[in-house]
Image 1: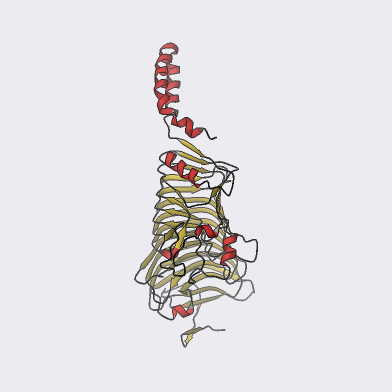
Image 2 (image 1 turned 120 degrees about the horizontal axis):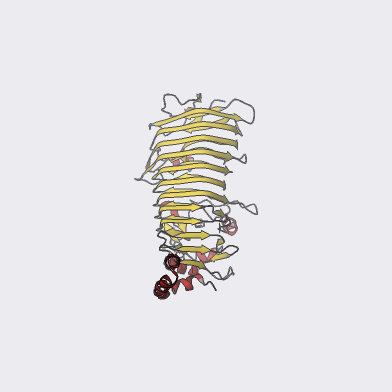
Length: 456
């Protein structure tokens, strides 16, 4: 039995007694004892502490106990997930309220991998725009689903003092079931994001590890003034079915976001600044087998303007596995029957690449060539700088800067020194760049029947 919450509940009744005792001891023992009694009263008038109990059985959900802890201690209190304890999150878990509260995660939050439970009673699953899943929370942007949500946190923190705090997505069964599918395939398996932060303000998350998400690791929406520090993410398959879409962070309609210090093994975007992400700083991050630290993808939805502005990316190490999926600094724009984008004031600095296939990329035909053929991308890219880049690439092409035709594309490289591992001279491919001086010697294509032909 966890006694702290129950003991705290008795405090209102006993505090008057403490006050009476205070008067007695003051008269009898003098001022020193009076000070001690005041300190005691102040101590027990502080916010409550809730230590979350667990059944210790993955077949019995601890979600009700978690909800009860937030209800009791979420307004100015302290919530503790115990060390050496695994909490079974077998149903939708929404951690709220949390107003000026502290959450200490020293154990493990494990999401159930019972796919049939999460997707039960789904209606019209073959239609991405009208499918419903009653046991998940749905966000229309990129058909995102969630089952562990930090909702409406204000001036609060999630921290692991020991560094043992872990959020486990138990993703292997999801990866097995999703094998051979893509996220945008009609009727594909709907997989929830591991950890969602929704409508947060002035929140810090520190020294937490996450592993094996069914989909993205972190989905941050409609939030501001967030600080993530010392975060460790790992998605590693035990068989031939790899993690899919395991982005480290995806921010959307979010401002004043800071990530400092992270180790990410994901197989997809290390970080993705999606639409209306502004004033974002990403520093001191190691990205292994990554699709890059990416602006976008943007302009996916017809009639919608996406903005990404005021972004600083600094001291990033990209380590690839040599396949075509590994990227570094990247901008992704949709073409086809799409919306539009503004990309402004984006700065990559102090970047190291090792065995990376595509170190520097602007992709204005994100998704597929067939889809892009139905319409041109619409995006203005201004004040983008890439400074102090070193390391090696798997092939000769170290950058591919393919900008939207007819739009502004102002990008500048400075002190870029990437050496192909093959020993040949580096090649910088460019198209529709409007910068007066890109900073490197570009190779331009000829266009034959709508297809780029690059010099040999």
